[in-house]
Amino acid sequence: MGATAAACPSELIRRREAGASTLDAQSRLELEAAAFRGLVAHLQRRTDVQNIDLMNLAGFCRNCLSKWYLAAAQERGLALDYDDARKVVYGMPFEEWKTEYQRKATPEQLQTFEATTPLHAFVSGHSTKT
Image (cartoon, rainbow, N blue to C red; front, side, top):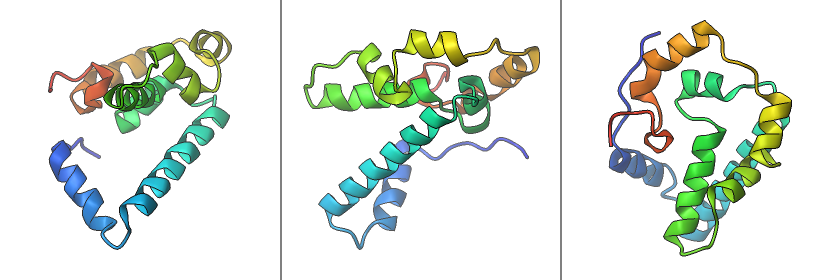
């Protein structure tokens, strides 16, 4: 299965809004928040899933979710730092999670990571696109 280019952010927003057109704004906001909480809870349970595997397969990881969470807080003028955002996503301080669950990446994982870098979420800081 080959890598494909992702749609631009404005196109993705248009698609999301078109799919939720029958929902009022508050309901859509609540459903999106619930989906985020479900994803975070799932990732907190699946400590066996490594961030590098998430990046290689989906182009985002727990750190990306933390950065999106932080960016949303900053857009709203809320006092939150990256460590606080990571604690929300990881369910514990990052250093604790890293010590307990993170494994050293294999050469194959690192090779795949480099090959898929153009497809990584912009927020990751890995992609050369802006």
